[in-house]
View 1 (spheres, rainbow, N blue to C red):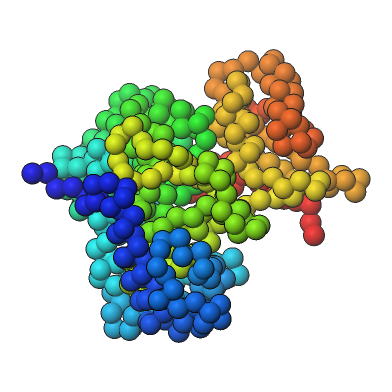
View 2: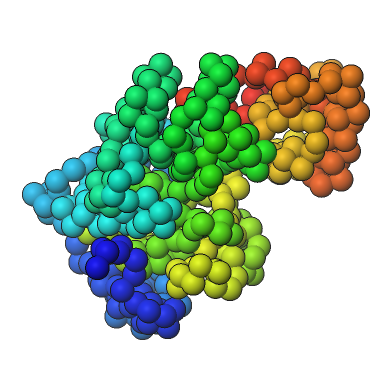
Length: 429
C-alpha cells in the first residue's frame, strides 16, 4: 500500500472533534509551559479549562509579531531549552529577528506536512525536485528538502539564484519539479526563452511560495517553462515554515492542514470574523506545535475562506491564494490600497504583462501615483496609450483614485530572485 500523508480522519465531523482535542492540549501546553502565555491568559481571565468547544478559541488573546520580538531570543517557548533541536529565523520590522525553536516532534511534523504538499501535487518516488530557495536560518530550503525526501522524491538542493547552475541541472539532471518564489520562476522562465530552451527541459510541475502571484504571471511561467501544473504553497517561519497547505490539481483554492492548525479570517481593523468568502486577515492557532505554539497569531496575510467541499474530495478546507498583507497597505489620498488590487486589475487587462511597479511621489504639494506596467512581449507600442487609459479607468472605477499609468517595454522593470518590490513610496514623511 502506498504511504499517504493525508489526515487519518474520514470526514469533516471527525476532523472537527479531533481539532477540539488538539486545541485543548495546545492551550493547556502553552499555559503550563510558557511564562508569556500564562501571563497573557491571566490578563484576560481565561484558563485552559474554559476551552470546551472549538468556538471558545475566540475567548483567547491574540499574539503578534511584536510579541515574538519583545520575547527575544526564544519567544513563546513552552518546553525546556534542552528539548530544542533547531531554530529558524526571519527578519523583523524593528531590526530584531524573530527566532522560533523546534523540538524533534516539530521537525518531524513539519516534514510530514510538507510531504503532504508533494503528495497533493502528485510528486513522489521517481521525481526530481530542484529546490531554488534559500537555506540556513530561513525555513524554505530545509523545509522543501525534508518534505521532498519524506515523500520519496529526489532533492536537487541548488538553493537560490545562480541561473547558470539552475539551467545546467535542469538540462543534465532532467529535474521535473521546480520549487521557488514566483519572481525566481519568472526570471528562470525568461532566461529559458532567451536561450531558446523553451520546451527543451523536463519541467512538469512548478511549486511557488513566498509572494503574491497573479494570473498573468502564472500563465507566463507555465508558457515558458512548459510545465503542466503550477501550485501555490503558503507558509511562514512562525507556523513551522512553508508547507502548511497547497492547492490540489483542480486549483480552486489552497487546502490548508486543519489537522495541524486552526484558521480564522478576521477583519484586520475590528478583529471580528468576516463572512465566509470575504477577504480578511489570517489568524492561526497551532494544534500540535511543542516548542513555540501559536495562539491566535495575527499573520497579516490577507485571503478568504472558500465555501463548500473541493471537487477532489478532500475533507481539508480551503482558503484563497494570498492577496497581500494588511501591513503592505499604503494610503493614497485618504484611500487604503493593497498592491494586490493593482495586480488584479492588470491581470484582467489585455496588452500588459505581470510585471508592474507603483511609484508614489509629491508634486506641487500633492500626492501623485504612477503605475508602470510592462507591455506583453511582441506587442505594438502604438497601443500603449489606449492600454494605459484602460488601466487608469479601471483603477478609478475599482479603487476610486486617479493614477497616471505608463506602459513600458517588456523586461524594463527590475527582476528579482526573491520577492519583487512593487511599491516605491518617495513622498517622504
